[in-house]
Image 1 (cartoon, rainbow, N blue to C red):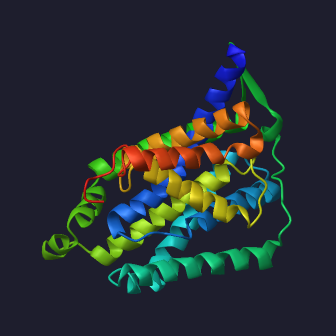
Image 2 (tube, one colour; image 1 turned 135 degrees about the vertical axis):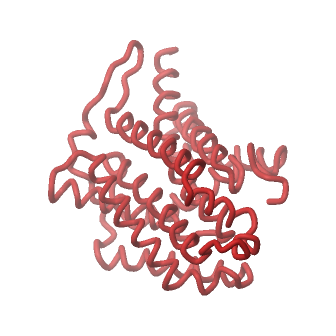
Length: 289
């Protein structure tokens, strides 16, 4: 019984790192631009389809598919901000909500027209490989996804903390007007920010493509998952996104073991309600959010 619980918790931690990467993309966009990306789940699904087609066409390892997803989704996010989102950044929040909900529906429709509603499993041997470490027997796909997600989170955190652009991004997040006064190119910062957020979502989607069948209807689930994760961890908090992802991943795994697999999404929402009652700003959320 102890071995079973250890395996369940370890699996939850591994998938939680990927959830943290998904949430990180959402929280970076919100923390810098102060807009709520309701199309974030669709960006994750774009990444799943990129992983599916990259593996299907070129038969490459999944981390290379994630690299392709990172480039494609960064360019996609950059162009999306430049062409559409920048016109609504300074508008009232209800304008932003309508725009991103409209983008969400548009992206879902494009996915449905392009690939249809049928699930498409990624033809990867990772889906069937396991690794035994003591009492633990873990999916190799989860290990590789978690390791890649953890490295990307650490690298992105270091880049945003120590690079010149990272300082510009943090300056724009803290004080947009002050950033303009000192000469920051705020439109470029915002475009790169949305590109980074979309890349995080796309990479996470590609990494979990051996675990989830590619289908458009997953987008709503991932959007809700991202929001639950960032609210639990704290809106706008880098560390909160990671801790929230780990918490939700473990909560899902425990719920699936204690009840039924279909109940795995119930416990995270119950946890969300408890967090909102006891600590409305999440684990690491700022007081003014």
